[in-house]
Image (cartoon, rainbow over all chains, first blue to last red; front, side):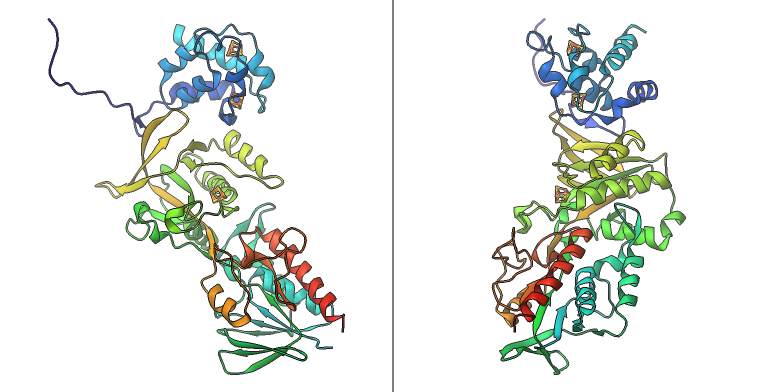
Length: 108
Length: 336
Ligand code: SF4
Ligand code: SF4
Ligand code: SF4
């Protein structure tokens, strides 16, 4: 049956009091570089996959930091591990190993 | 030639200008409106870069100035040009004859109570950068219970047309990051958040400090201006901002909120401007006719500037400018 009437929308607000940063911290313990991102966007701008599919290394690690792990995985679904983001990152962040950690987290 | 020079202000710029003038053979009188020398630096703990003791820097200047008159609790009331320079009347009624004048009146720290939405003076757990520095300096901070979450709000009273300050105060990004690292040094398990609009880490080594704050101390940087702070039933501070990088509103409950009060025009600039007939800009800092080439010159001959009387400056810049002002005075007075 068609639903009608009012319903309560889920808040899209980031609540840092309850956000779970365990994946972020877990990755940071293995690849500490993740903490040094300055959100410049070079990685996503040069991403080979981003022209066709929504792909963003920057978006992925930012969302993990804010506790949206699922969203982060979405940002990397089309990643081909070409390594261009690693080449351009001005902070020299080891993007490859971070991407692998994120993908593994989803599998595990 | 008149070998007397009058310096207004006994902050770092005024003291350094006086010292450089003294070394060049001038007799200097310093006027200070408060009851002690050192300006804002006497309340600060450590300076970046180099972790220099702020009060130590002032003490060194004062001891090097031994024999120089510093008139405390004194302001200027009138000044006239004379054949030999200036005759300036001070609040005690005394008249001071000088060949040149150096204005080193510095800045005022923005009164954070004006930004009522941040709750300074209303909520117990909201303090300013100056308050935090005083806690570091008195070591009182070590007696405090560890705050689980600490937030820093950048640009309080700066870059804000609502409080009539369009300018960037220049040093508070660096100060916030420095203080965030210091908090993490004291309490490595506290979570620290900096709420910024742009991070202006412009000086040599500042970007390294930013990098260290991220990599070594794990300070969190959130791009978004805090829109309001409130108090919850436990007395903690609830802060709202937009996380502009994810385009979502954000909320966090903090145990301590530090407001980075900016540098604004000295409240006495208006009086000084009237007494000496030198204009201020729209922002209330003194007008520099030639800010790029002769930053220490005013548009009145014989009157020079040093330090943040002409806009926000770092300590190093103030010291250099004070030396430059002393040389400009020397050049001016050697003409006769
Ligand atoms: S490695 Fe992945 S995220 Fe990085 S540029 Fe290549 S496709 Fe994009
Ligand atoms: S290029 Fe590097 S610093 Fe820039 S957003 Fe990507 S990961 Fe962050
Ligand atoms: S230095 Fe940073 S905190 Fe201070 S006013 Fe400028 S941008 Fe804001």
